Image 1 (cartoon, rainbow, N blue to C red):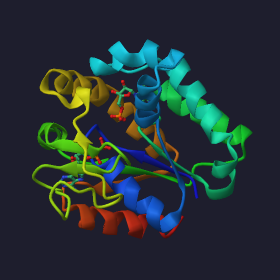
Image 2: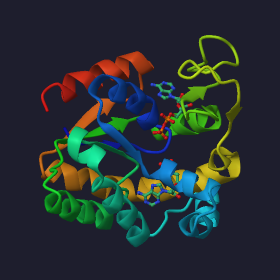
Image 3: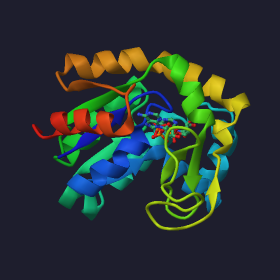
Image 4: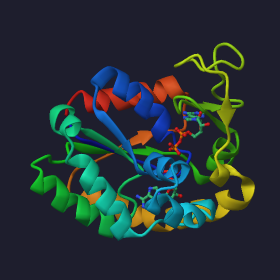
Length: 217
Ligand code: ADP
Ligand code: AMP
């Protein structure tokens, strides 16, 4: 099974991805996570993308698609399938992915578009916090750890807020992504691959809808 998780920033892609991976064992590939890791390790790409990401702009299609191409060719993906999160974000990336998927003989099984009204996204992004150790995602109102201050997944006690979730970056990030969103939805709808999921419900209910789509892949 090869999936794409689509949705505007804050729609719940990473949150749903955690449970999908647990149940279906696909390889979770988040381009945002890859760029953040590159920044933390101060690799050449990391240094190049830092100011772009901090401002909430998109990294170039060439750099992003090359990164995904290299990752999808790895053995774990060939064995277990991929779940892309945050890629593709432009038509050029979607076209690049078609090429990569066909070269690797790993066709896209389906695209899950997690749909959340734009006005709810600022609240989601500004309340998001993340486990420093394992990357699990929480929200200060909607999704608190079961034991205060302790990550449900790995038991660590340190959390952080993403730089681009701070108010000055959020607005631009949403604007940039909204602009690209409709053409991408149309791209996958025309291919008959798009499945819309109502992301404006409790996390568990969103997952039930995700499951009912995935089971047919
Ligand atoms: P994305 O990966 O699409 O940017 P996340 O999965 O990180 O989004 O979710 C953004 C924020 O919203 C996080 O703080 C997360 O805990 C919270 N969240 C995710 N899904 C829901 C939901 N269905 N209802 C309320 N809050 C949610
Ligand atoms: P995300 O974690 O998906 O919210 O992505 C965080 C940031 O990483 C984005 O605001 C972009 O700067 C960069 N990024 C992630 N994925 C892509 C992509 N597919 N294309 C361009 N930039 C990306």
